[in-house]
Amino acid sequence: MYFKIKGFKGLKKMTKLNMAPITILVGKNGSGKSSALSALNNLKNISSLGSRFKSNKMESFLDFTLPKRTDFGVEVDGELEYAMPINLSFFEDEFELRIKYGANTDLIYLTRFEIFNTKKNENLFCLESKKLITEDEWGSEVEGREIFLKINLEYLIAEFVRLKNIKPFGSKFIIACAASAENVSAIHQQQTDTNNKFLENLKIGFYDYESDVMKESDDGNLSKKGLPHDFKRLKSTNEKLELFVVKKEDELIDADDYIIKLTSSIQNGIKILDRTKEYIPGISNLLEELFHDKSKHHYLEPNNLIKFSGLDKEYSLLNVIGANISLTPLFEDLIDEMLLDNIHSNTYHLLKNKSEFKYIPPNRIVKDAGDKDTPAGFALGYAMALKNAGYLLDPSSFFIDYWFKEFNITENYADIDSALKILENSNVLKKEGYGIQQLIPIIVILSLSDKLHQDKVDSDSNHPVFWDEKNGTTKKFLIEEPEANLHPSFQSKLADLFLDAWIKYDHEFVIETHSEYLIRKLQYHVGSGKIDPSVINIYYFDKDEEPRKININKDGSLSEGFGPGFYDEADNIAIELFMLNNKRLN
Image 1 (tube, rainbow, N blue to C red):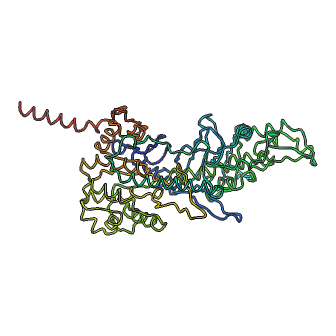
Image 2: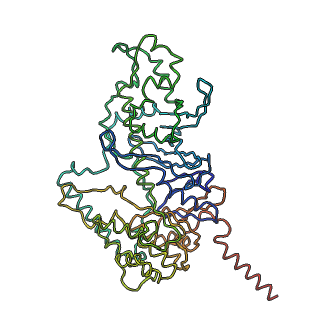
Image 3: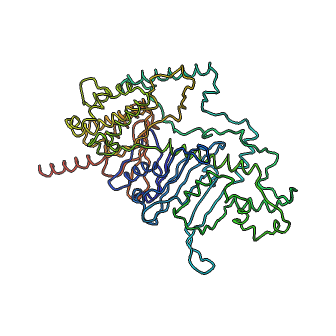
């Protein structure tokens, strides 16, 4: 998984960050580290996700909202860009979701939504809007917009033919109602074994792990097939691949040249002049309409397509002979099932499950236990939500007790309840040292996992719940300066804490840090063979430059050096002290 960001606060150039279980952002102050962290945190604010009744049926909705411009640090009339990989059903190629926002005084608004085929270096789908000032018939200026719509029909047809000639792929998700009693029993046993193995794993301290327990990084993406789609819903066959038909009084008319030109115009992109002044700028509403109406949207109505492509001026065939043009079932299959439903569901899944981060700021000391915006408040609220949902939190106690002792927080046994009581009472928390006050909320948050805290699988249920391992609710954390107010020995121990949380809970981290000790300890664990180098990505930020990706080699060394003033600062000061003392002696 990776993210590309441009235009967010200090990120003036396209910045690409490849995600690993532990991604480290390091560099001088003002170099863009915090901007990158904030840009990832604000991903959740670019869209609204949920379910609602529409046209008398329940459907999921995906709206690209209009966030406040100042929250994203975009200049007036500036642009904000995000890009990330998206796995689409049906297709085998690799794709990228690219979205671009414009900005006015108050808001940022969606101006471009694009699905780009990175393997073939071409668009699959693109919807774009530009502000346009035109004159009406009386010579007065009219504000409108020019819509650009491009659909790669050639690619869709080629993929349709390929899929019709092979056995449809099966769903990777288990459907309870379709499983036999024997299969259900086997699945229950497998999940019970998994839970038992997890509980055993929790009782092992980080330093007691054997090397074969450590795992390599998994990119965390879906399979190349994306979310499952019902291939049987495609009504068309390979026998007739026409997208449009021309008829006069139910009699087919030979108009191949005309249809080829119409298809090519959509393939290359059509421009639509919209003089209706929109209250909401951008294309958010239009995109939502396309996802809902699909091939029945008025932009895709054949006569409108003819008008937008300019064929109404170039050709007079239809008017002369009084024929009508209409869409074929193949066009509907390609647009409805293979394109728009496919993009909608997988974009929804991507933004909901792959782009949700929990931000943990540098100041984690609780002021009000009821404030959910603080890490302590989040930990309390999340723990109670898990309890109310029927999860047992006992497994968290193993993790909390181990790390409370590692960081010398307590010599007595600590469990989830005692830890929550500390967070609930700010007076109790204030008795701890300043660094420990900031550390406790992190340990408690990392001990919580709604993916693995089920106490058992209910074998008596008529509707057993199964989860797909790849799509479990892995928590992704953005942590700013976790080393704040910690002794160097505890700073290095943070590396152990984050690795332990990844191994046990599949938590993933993007960490902004200035701690040499944290990074040195990660290098040590790679060099000692405890973890694979792919588990850690390091990005070094220089002001006004793209961040440099630095790898940890298998021997623990770095693939290239950091900028001046990081690892070499202590040596530089030591040399200056030596020269100063030497000068005094002379």
